[in-house]
Length: 207
Image (cartoon, rainbow, N blue to C red; front, side, top):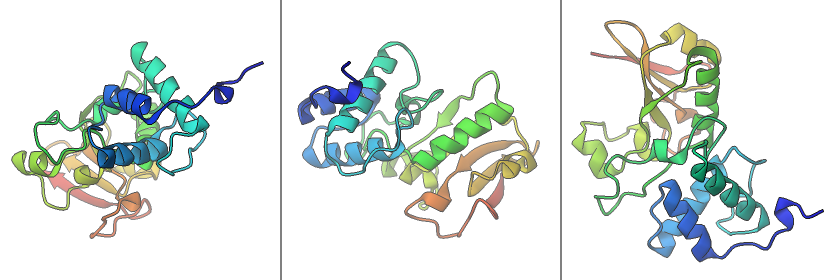
């Protein structure tokens, strides 16, 4: 019997077409390599992929599965989430935008948060932000949104409840209600100047 990984690998051009449909910007070879790396690190639909920027048989299988699920209206990065949900809201207006950047650790944390406190579904209101869009919305220069490590969500769970999950290194909550509206995986981010960890997450209020 032919398995998914026995199929021929797709070309880089075909991979670029799928990644673009998922929300990535891939119009240069540099952007395509970055998109492949993000996809290989973050995709939770298959066993962990090797991060090599190559379109081998396992990456081919994962890309084809993600595209099939996109067409079916299902999650393309994990069971309940899609890459498009993490897409920068500038929609490629700014030249430096990569379209989608998201850390796998953030996706893992969001799945746990959804299971524990958002049984009816968890909507991401802001994911990745390119530098210019982050500045336009008043984001700080060290925002985890810049690195694909953060997500803003509807304020439902309390800070105590989110900390108890042990998956986020940064937690921002609405001051008036104490409900969490920002979570991030800064413990796995390329930049973590405040040193937040899942054991001792950085926690702050929003007005």
